[in-house]
Length: 144
Image 1 (cartoon, one colour):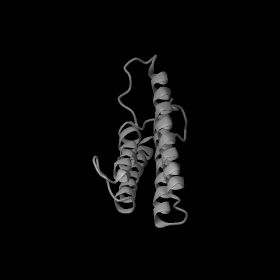
Image 2 (spheres, helix red, strand yellow):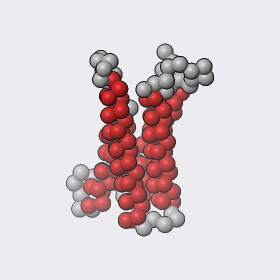
Image 3 (cartoon, one colour):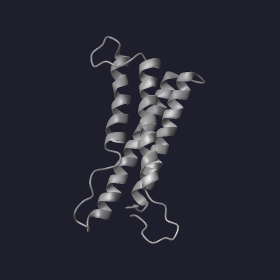
Image 4 (cartoon, one colour):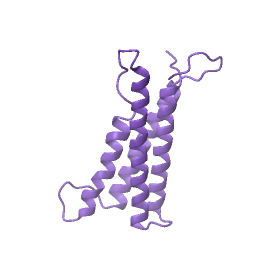
């Protein structure tokens, strides 16, 4: 729930803009990682790694970025708090799944200290920062 009575309240607008910018950075980093370091994307290919790369891209584009900030508020005020908290739980689960997937890719590929490892690590960092800014956007008051 948004805090409504505070003399020094921070509005959600700058944090929301930051969330959108971080989301764009995450998309760019994942696409650089998949297209440059992992050999590209393909729905059908002899190289199964290209097909698996679709998973990383769809996990970022789908649950985390497209559905991450939620839909319109419910019209029923009695269900609004439950709607907010349930949406945040689903969003946090999607972010955790993304972070675990990035960690699994890092470990299974044995990246060590390579440029590809930096891309994966910074992607994970920006996903986390994106999630934090979305969380702040949800719980800080609106500046309308």
